[in-house]
Image 1 (tube, rainbow, N blue to C red):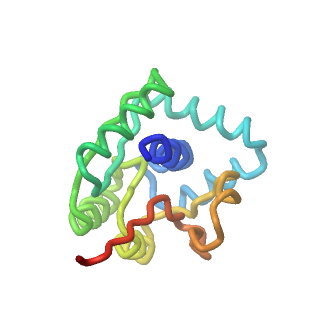
Image 2 (image 1 turned 135 degrees about the vertical axis):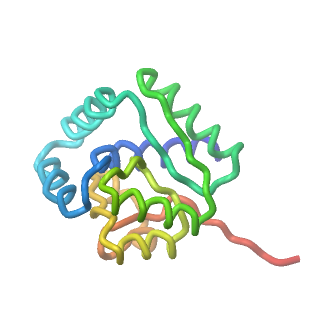
Length: 160
């Protein structure tokens, strides 16, 4: 389970790292430049950008144990990068990201929240489209048709 979460986080982080501090409309053009690169070239460019920043900022609403495992696995794989984790409730993530976007200072590289939270941010124009060669590996039912997000976690809860 932790290995799968680290893989998912790695994908999300590597392809979200260009979004710091710019509106989603600008990100679309920056991300479009990556589309013509091979997967290896794209990965190298994204890792280089992340290394230049020195850290990756994640906003999420997961348990501290899971969040720490994700951050630890990522830092182990990418030893030059620090991971800063901000844990919020789903509603708090939306408010925080919206306020940062309005101020032009979006700190998060990755936002892991429930679908409703992500859809609110998409409607507000804060999110860029998710472009990744790895998206093809996701089942169709895990992909957003508009390509703003992909489902990385599926929680099934059954009442007792």
